[in-house]
Amino acid sequence: MKLEVRIAQWLLASVFIVMGGFRLWQALHGVQMSNMTLLMSAGEVLLGVLIAAGWQLRVMTLIAAILLLVDAALSHPFWHFSGAAMGPQLLQFMKNMGLVGGLVLLSTAGGAKRR
Image (cartoon, rainbow, N blue to C red; front, side, top):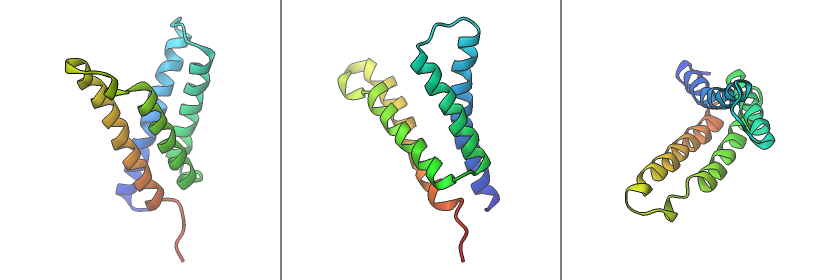
């Protein structure tokens, strides 16, 4: 795999490792979270580690892309807002869409050996 693809792989994986790890760290320091949030955060860290390691890269990146699509639609419904309140939601939604694009691209560039 080319160096620039490997760097993209690690940077995309870092989003999942850092954000999932951050929520787990907060929970360890007394921030109240639901069991579902803790479970999803642990899964997010695991997914990030698997992407960083390149294990089943095509499948893992597509799973991550689907999770981000769902997260964008459920957590950042900018279409329900207006005025100044719409901006931050649209920004977060589009950030997720950009990450989805990178993950889909990585799913085609990595992993599989060519003959």
